[in-house]
Image (cartoon, rainbow, N blue to C red; front, side):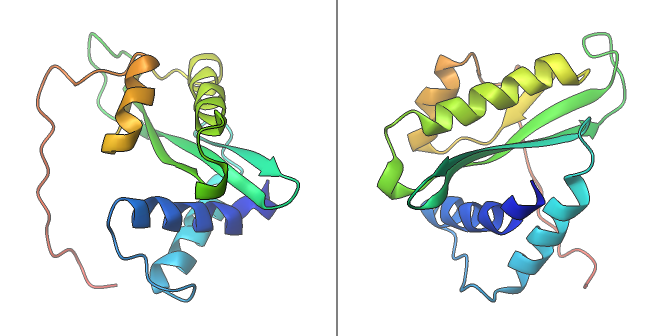
Length: 154
């Protein structure tokens, strides 16, 4: 699957653009960092998975990516592992064919059968919300909030 890294970065850029985020051109610095992130995680089959649909004409046209994050254990989640779905994206030329659902089904099966994750979260776009709800995703019991900081310069 290392051959899919550039496709995963391309699909991530497409997803970000669809969300109204300026992904920049093919040389934007975040793309190299994203490629390194995918490359570092590919060997971690118990913590990371990516499922793609490969079209004979266009190459990778859909994907769903998931990773496990370690949190403190709790009664509802003794392993402390949380799953996070990201990078669900489909090329506009191949949308409405079930590719995103196929990738997401494979990813959710991986979470259930290959990891100790008991909670899986994601950030949904308006267009994707119905798909996720049809697969059982629902708003969390407690509100999810974010604080953006300046961070440490790279």
